[in-house]
Image (cartoon, rainbow, N blue to C red; front, side, top):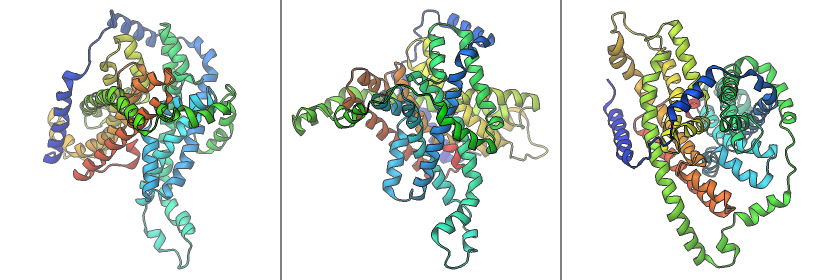
Length: 490
């Protein structure tokens, strides 16, 4: 049976989501949403291969941005992981990873414009914070026995390199490979803010109703991610890492005066720039918090909690698709394909598509967040269920699900769901750029109005909110004694 504390916690989250439901805008406002959806599905089934000629370089740059950004993030994260036990490092890493890649991109666009450095830093900085946390956990969990076998007098660095790293390396390599897949998704989405990656062409094709082109671009992206382990083999990685910086493109030249002005003037609060004093600053800040931050936080929390519960329900329904206890070989292959598509499609891209079809509301965001995150959790829990050995007289069907499998995977399921909670919150905030009134909506509006000081305050609020949710999730995992692998957390 599922433990009572886990059941009570789950029911508590469901109750919170149901409480928020009346306050959520979940209406479909488009005139003919299902007709447009039919056109999109037809386009997906009839992809136009001629579009590949014009997007070949965008595809190459999508890969190049991912490799350079992830490589820099991994290198920085490994160094930070060595000092992760110190609270200033932990706090700094929590802050940078709490800000979404698209927010970082919006910041760096004001500094560097449409230059490759914008895309690289937008991926590398938050990824460094993620890598630091996960690498530190992997290193802490490494077997201490090899260190004890080293001769007395062995230096600290030698102990680390020859005893700790070799044991942790397979886990580090596995997690880094997973983050490369995430980096491809992040790189593609950067196209929605103007970077020359696949997302730029996807947005263009979709806005023109060229759904066969959209279908071909999505199919290409799915194949790119699905075959990652085939073309990104370890022996080829040095070649890719050497070539990638030269494939990013040149972009527009950086105006360093803009960089200096952004950090010394643009993000400095207006009252302080004008010399009005701290009293005026307090009034200015209070007005922003009341009129923009508070409504954005409320909408972000409402959308996050509803999406979290829908994600959980969908993941529990999806994991049998890839479990040997419920499906045969052919059915599992189909189920695996479905979950690959679900977890490969970036939430931002899926939300963008659904918003065009159904109109602006929270519903497209809820569905997009739930599909993507349920695909990840369902895949991992399905794999976990395959490790379970059942009795020869175990029941079948619904009884097997409810009495044999679910109780054994529910703890890991909750742990994964809580790991994804902060990520769902982060994605919810950024979806505001698409017109949903979460924090990202107010950040994007401030950017468009050239109120960078206001945008900076709102981004700080977003970071604090995400750090708070991450801390709450960690507290719940400890309280419920939930454990899973470090790589599942991001």
